[in-house]
Length: 230
Image 1: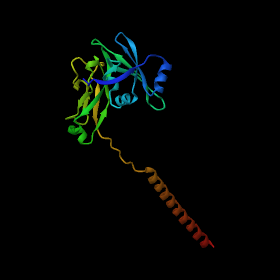
Image 2: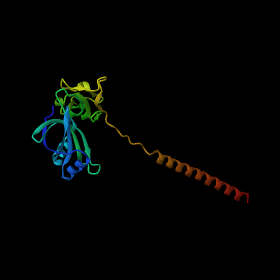
Image 3: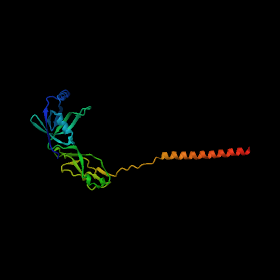
């Protein structure tokens, strides 16, 4: 399970677009904490702190403990709005959860032991089919990432979901097949093709020259014949 991260937030008194714009004018990011049969809590967050969390992978798969006005709330990020021009966060939604909460979450796949993969050492390429896997689990059981071991794989081999170790209370949402996560593909070889066009042009030029020579000889023979008759 990933480490629970803490950060502070300040309460907001009002909801609505006007209040959110006012919060942004103050240099903070408006947000809301909802769920777990509790009243929504309007908050504002330091944009530097939020940007720091966004810069690391797994923002939506990480449990946060948000401290607001003396209270602590264990939450998951569920929605993030970005400015269409600057890409800066302008609103964030967090969901509280309980011990009985189960949810679907995308978790990143990390590939290890690439240096011990014979297929890659001889020029093969790691072809990643799925960079993330959708899991169903309790928020406190979300793994930080899933590990795929490349050691010993040859060109043509594949890694399926059955080869990934999952915690006991974590399930894959796709259960009807042993789907592929990655393969070791053969290297792409680009063969140089000779320019047949140039060869054809050279052949045509040679043929034209030969025909011209024969015509000249024929003309010469006719001239000689005319002189004889005279």
